[in-house]
Image 1 (cartoon, rainbow, N blue to C red):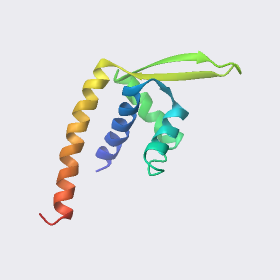
Image 2: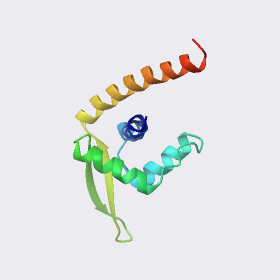
Image 3: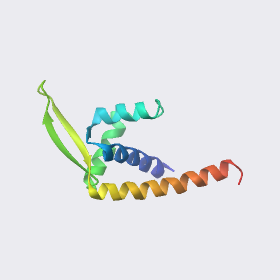
Length: 106
């Protein structure tokens, strides 16, 4: 079950990055907003997910310096990441249907 949860976090991050590149805090805020505060991901959870996605070449990263002189790292989904997202969505759909069937007593 833990593997599905980790895969779920990756899927959500990839889905957001499919739309546009984002930096870490922006991803956290967007997940929170879009989920109506259900997904309140902490930095300690997000950054390992991002680093794993980057290691697997599912996202790329670039750094910029803000007006205040801070370095900000932006992440973008790669072509390989888009393919992985589609696979994860299919897996999630099958998983969700199975859970729904069990809960419904089917």
